[in-house]
Length: 274
View (cartoon, rainbow, N blue to C red):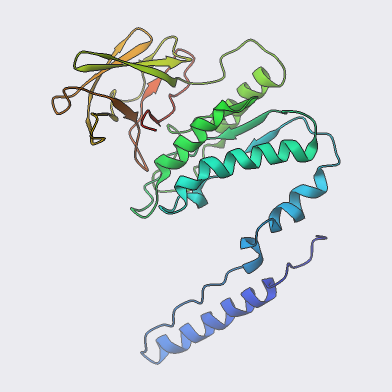
């Protein structure tokens, strides 16, 4: 692609202009406004269109790493469960196309946004967290800097700082902490569930209560849990769940999350349920 309009773009722009005109005419005549025709930019929905036009031309050049910030547009209830597989496939494919090994792939976990019941931001965040199993990946958690009323949070400085920490550690080998707490495992202790984390030195709450934890028994039904910090672990209990099996944290489109480590980096939302 050489900077010109892509196929169908002119058609989409014309349809939008005609709709504006028809809407104005209908309102002036006291009639219902016509529905907007679903088109927009047909080719942007075509498989590989954006890749072929914007990524493939770069593959002959050396690459140091990738910074990725996306996920919101995949949050529809029907699409969110596919994100983990799609994201892992994208990373693996790009690395294969460049043929420079497992170069660093640093990405941003989507922040908090009220959205709507037709979207599932928690599943997207979990898919991003689980993608950390791929070698040379790092994730900047932003659950504390989003704007519930703005899908594009304005605090990009904090986001950039956290990505820079990851780059300094993975790409440049600096000995520093680049991540907030991430769940490692759980152990059952009677009617309680203990959570063990990576990157959990100095575990504490910041800016609010220790909230948004839930537990579930073997039935898979989650209930709010009382959380207590115990060193670098957290102990969960719930009167509604006498034999807890699963735990989750921040499982909502816009959760209330205040768990941090000693380096001031926030914990990633998660679920331990497969």
